[in-house]
Length: 102
Image 1: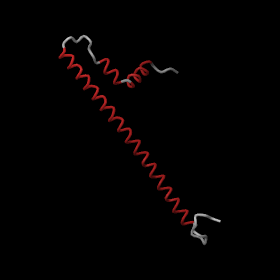
Image 2: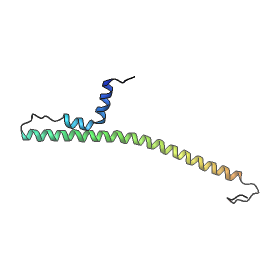
Image 3: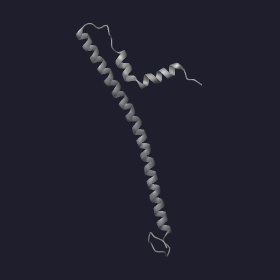
């Protein structure tokens, strides 16, 4: 089943958001130097805002992922320590406490 063209175009626009804003934000019919410099600064400001927005979205995603990974890692470490304590307590029989068993 083929997706809608609108969906594909939206995905492509999201991939190249900075290119779209740069190349579609310029008016090529500007003749005055001052107007051109104002338009260039407006484009720069739009790009900076877009970059900041993307960075905040990525940092939120990374933080949620990092927290999940840290919780999982801590759980695994606690389980390893608990298993080690269990094995040590079970090994309290008359056998020697050497790591090499014969």
